[in-house]
Image (tube, rainbow, N blue to C red; front, side, top):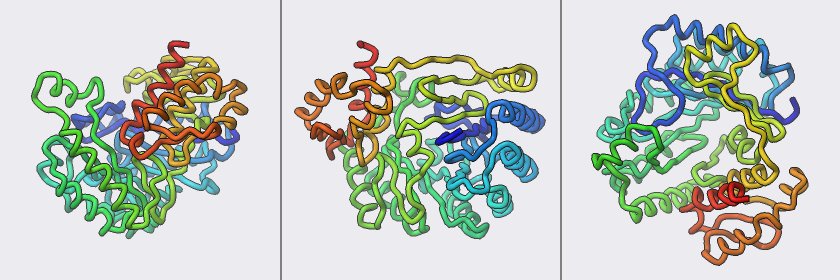
Length: 381
């Protein structure tokens, strides 16, 4: 399992937020939590064949929603199958309404050394709009609880571009996160994802994105203010402070191999991508009774792998070294995509020096479009 990361998907949430397109469910019956844990143990036992993963990420959903005893069981299950002791980074996601000192201590004792807390905003009216179940006081209390439990690497997720949000409200959110002393910040521009309530509301005219100029001002302020505070902008939306980069996400952006377990989780190895069944009951049934939980599998063509390497890697501040991609995938990436590089450089979205491609300041604002050009070329090809 050399250079392979592990992702563990915990699909439970206290509420389904209007912007969320993740595979998550509001489940009141805690017996389903127990069934999920039994199924996870069964799948993990089949999928992970020993060895130490490069990184582990326990996400969701909301892992911290589990009761203390079930959270302890979750981490024991992962520890039974995976060598966590020497793993450089083991991250767990948590939400403020469910993270307590007790749960943070259980996470720390269970091998987690990095917490990612979903704050999004500190403003009450924006939290209500986003369907979040916490308030600003709980967000700060969760951070304090994590510190009290011994975590010295805490990341906060923040969101800007929320409909109706002012520039000053975003500026104050950023300052409040800095005052708390976060070790890493993820600052995402809200997007209207297909299948979400927000996207349905947008189509029906009940809501819509902010003015692009305002979103741009928020984005540019984020980068300048966090640079001033000593944070490294190592990816479009991610900023490393004292905790350093998120190694797990960086592994994805570098197109590393990974194993995903849990409902809807995806895995990738040597150009083969498989995705688990998404419905909770169907995944549990398959994990507990069958040899596989797979819903779909795809073998990527060489050009697809090159396009995805660019689509992922272009988001990193370092950009993409084209020859390294060519050697790894045994295809001439430059020949396949150079016409796009030339056009994008002419448009001002990338810098292309014949060896490396990276986003310009303007390109950072349109990273999804830049990366989408590479994916479209693979489809056309």
